[in-house]
Length: 375
Ligand SMILES: *Cc1c(COP(=O)(O)O)cnc(C)c1O
Image: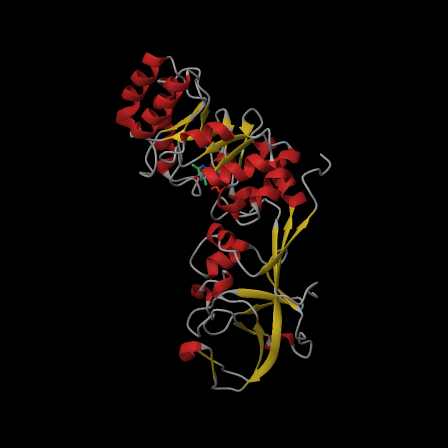
């Protein structure tokens, strides 16, 4: 594949595939509203372009991590309903109100700040409440449910939604899922008539029991694998091609890269890629003789990374290509149609989420299509 620019890697984002993924999930969760999680720059795809495409596909509810991200979505999609997952940032209440952002309130401190603002302005500004049912992260503790209820009942305030988050949704048979589901049911019983939301991508795919009134997929929209050990049904959204800078030869017994951790056991052809850990190709994806690392797709074949990945360079063994060697300037696929982000994640002992959200820096980012794909 020829790169369209001589400037380095090319990150191509297929907004049509993003839109089709949202529609596919919306079908699976028919009966619940399908939101879109666009935190962390929409998992590395670009929060403004992604939010616009998702809106064109039909999404109206968006989840972000921070108020800054909320402002970015507000600017891209003026009529979006935006929840800020990690709550009311201290002192930011006026900003939320101005930007019409809904905090997902997760502590008594946040609740008091928000309620004080509502009282001060005599207006019931919308919010959601997050209850921790077992991940032990952000959220009201279950023993605070009564207190929360009392506090809002005296003021006549009600949240737009209550929610919780699963610790093990990627493993559908994990018993913790049923435990958290039951605990969430007990919270819901304390908030009759208030819409509820529990499911991320994996829980959405696991079954209707988890859907309630709104589902919150993230990774699956971007083509990543949500459920472990199952075929990923989503379309790839992100394709990364990086430039081959040089093709060289190595002799038997020579070593490759820092630390001399890979020894060539045959006369080898090596392609040097202009791509390294500073571009998001984790050093843990290095290949040693004892442990294979990342893989790269070049001229129709999947070729292994050999030696340590360095800051700006990665070496790939292309001996198997025979005489059909690539030329300098040609692109090598890191993921896209032949390899996916989860293949790379598996090779580095991490997950597709981290691979996607580490794609910062030195790429030409190009967008293909938009959300207005035919139904
Ligand atoms: C990130 C996040 C999601 C989306 O999770 P995916 O696994 O990417 O689908 C949903 N809910 C909460 C609370 C989150 O933090």
